[in-house]
Image (cartoon, helix red, strand yellow):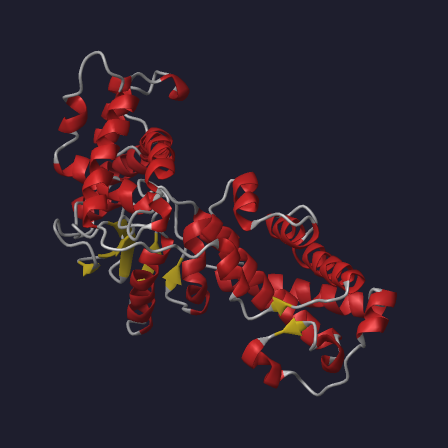
Length: 402
């Protein structure tokens, strides 16, 4: 299937068509950018389409307070605008005035879309902020003593450094939130992540590492008044614990450090064993009889670019069908809003995979192309897939959830 392989490389890897391959990527003309949109070139769509839409969103968010209104978040509007342009083969952009730049024309077009959407809004709704979501975690801090607060957060930082490495993004997130006092949105901005990705990483670290650590090494009677674990308090083991004062004074003895280091090593080894044979190939030009190509789609089933086009041309995806199994492909919609709108479809896919162990599902980096998301946004949705042996994930997803 040589032709398929060539197409896959053009659509997924280089992201460049012949009309603008010779140009510097940062010096494309409006015509080259528009051609990139038509070709569904993921790099150009991410760089220019979402870049221009973000400019428009920032302008009109200040004027109309968009984030406080349902269905008016950035991705919901940007995805709707993109699908509208796709349906009309990007003719609304071709018909711009000769004297007007593509960027200005798109900003105006974005405005018309959101004005129509505003007419549909019946009541205001304030989206839950990162801080609000953080407050709803199982682990909450209710600390009255400043010195203890400092030592407690310092311990959390040390846990992060020991488990993830001092320079890892996870450790940096813990330090910025709990030691340096940054707000969640500021952490996201400085690390080039979305606020939802920071939230998901923080929740995962608390659930997988920090909370179990405190339960293992601290006496429940001493930390209970400072750390609230919700319903999980009842599951605290009755095995002997280190007292809080001893823990803070000694900062762990050598034996405990060695024990934790061994646990870290074993966890990493288990993850490597789990990943073995379950990394989706970067290039897929053919499938075995039992393999299923899992790709990101849109609810309208317009499989016009990227992995969706490959699925449609070669693996049985059906135009007009945006969800579920189609031939030797499985569609997961990613173009209808933020990450949380994708979660239900991912959950449906995971359940489907569990009930079809005879199939091997090759998940591509869904949502990380034309939909505009990063692996840090999407990968946490596939956390459960680690335990489902007939699901392979992209290397970029494994790097986030391991």
